[in-house]
Length: 154
Image (cartoon, rainbow, N blue to C red; front, side, top):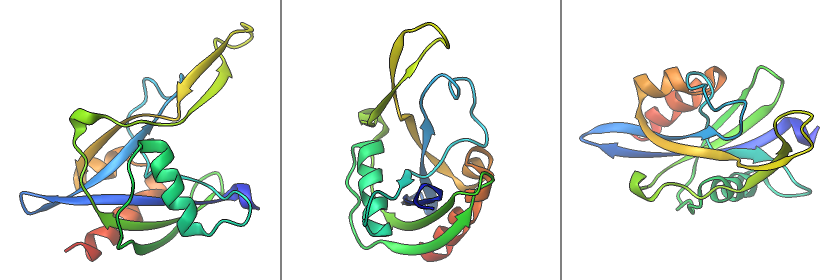
C-alpha cells in the first residue's frame, strides 16, 4: 500500500497580484516531448515510517534542490488515474528560474534492449504558471490542488 501513497508540496507566489504555481516536468525519455497533462507538484512515495508531511518536504528538496519554508497549509488529497493517492500541502515561496533546479536522478536502460544504462534527472525542468496555464499542464487529477491553494493564498 505504501507505494500507492505519496505526498508533495505545491509552492506558490504572488506576482503582480496574481497567484502563480511552481510545477515540475518529469525527466527521462518517455516525457521528453510531452508537455500538457504531465507536469506535477514535487512529490514522492512513503519510505518506512516517515510522516506524510516529512515525505513531502524531502521529495520537494530531492526533486528541486529547494527547501520548503513553513508555514505549510494542508490542501488535502487526490487519487490519480493509476490509483496513487497523493496528499499535499501548499506554501508561499520564491524561486528564480535562472537558477534552474537540482533534481535527483535515476538510471535506466536506454535505448531499450541496448544494454546501455543512462542517467536521467527525475525532474528536468520547473516553471511558474498562472492558473489557466497550470490547469492545462498539470496532471488532470491534481487540478484540485491548484484550486485549493488558490483559496488559501487569496
